[in-house]
Amino acid sequence: MPYLVGQGVSEPGAVTLLTLKATVGFGSVLVVGSVILRRLFALVAETRNAETFVALCLLVSVGMGAIAKNLGLTDTAGAFAAGVLLANTNYRAQIQADILPFKGILLGIFFMDAGSSFDLDLAVSEWPTILTGAVALVILKALTLLAATRVPRWLEPNRLPFPEGIRLAALLSSGGEFAFVVLALAEKLKALPEELGGVLTAIVLITMAVTPLLGDVAGALADTFEGEARGGGVRGSGEQNGAAAALDAGLNGEGRCEVAEDAIVVCGWGEVGRSVSATVDAMLAEESENEIGSPPRNVAFTTRTSALDTHVGACDLRGRGTALLFGDGSNPSVLRASGLKAPRAIFVTYSEHERCISACVRQGGAGSPPPLFFPGRPRGA
Image (cartoon, rainbow, N blue to C red; front, side):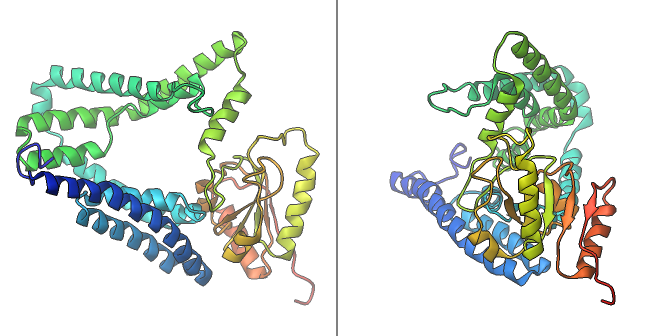
């Protein structure tokens, strides 16, 4: 942006150096950071201290922002890259649950700040321009996203089916929060007149406000095209969902995977937890619904990183065996962050009786809990 208004360096050597720092340098930081983060989170996870875990997450975000700024990028880009790094670890479900309070507070601050930048008088006086711009933004962005999902199958074998591409394009067709960052910087550098910046801000805000409506439209369009696909003998919905799941379930070195929304949950990976998981695996193997290619339907949670290093989970077997994930399985937020929206049952297998009771109380207070099972305390204990 500074170069557009003539405020940046203009020497070819300096421009080349800045470009290398922002691309090669920052890319190297991401690669090295992903390796270091695994070691750091493994060490912190062994302490089983939630405060230290949250502090490390915040440190990664702030640190990546500072590194990005020193390399010529914005601290916002650094924070975004930190989110990508944290999401690509086996600890992402626990991270999402731990930072949930911060998410609510910061989202509220963001929307209040965004709403305060909405100039109502300008919107009333320029409503034809703003309305046209909002419609054009939604249509152009939706078409661009839909085109991105239509890459040749030889280039991307797991591309989204057309109904899922329609759903994605409609859901993401509104303006994004990075628009405010760009527009604020452009106004600060005098690259945009103040009135034009206000019009563009209003356009983005209006498209964000109609996101729930766009979600309903996306669902209706996807259902319509799925119905036509079934009627025309095109791939059925099961195969379509399998292709979509295959796209979303890319594995990394930490064993990242997607699990079934109604999977059976085992809290703990001790002797009892492993025995219960083996029994559940045998039961699921006899069910016809547990088909090869479907996400794992048996999920165990543990906070012992040593168990994650030695267990071969179902993430790479797709539908057979137990998917072992890091996190506090007694926390409903961790289950939701892992994609478990409606577990069929939860087995609490902790060795400490008080911890089992606490886990059942936490799950029972989360609305309508699934059936809960835990080992009883022996008489006289």
